[in-house]
Length: 100
Image 1 (tube, rainbow, N blue to C red):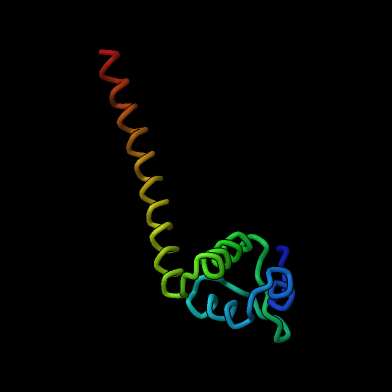
Image 2 (cartoon, helix red, strand yellow; image 1 turned 120 degrees about the vertical axis):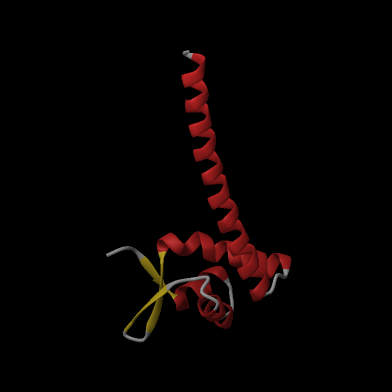
């Protein structure tokens, strides 16, 4: 089983409101596991929670804004990966023509 942390512990550690955490879940920005009526976040999702908390509390970005920014950054990352793939293919093709 992967490592996880309860919602209550996260609220204390990160000094965030429990409603903020629940809204992140409602917006689909965090995925949780529920066991014995306790909400858990997987450790691998902690960077996202930290990022959302910083954006929300430090930059005063609301939940719809967090959702938009998160989705745009995911799309940008996918475009960057695709661009690298295409550049690698182009480089391989270019190398073939140099050998001729």
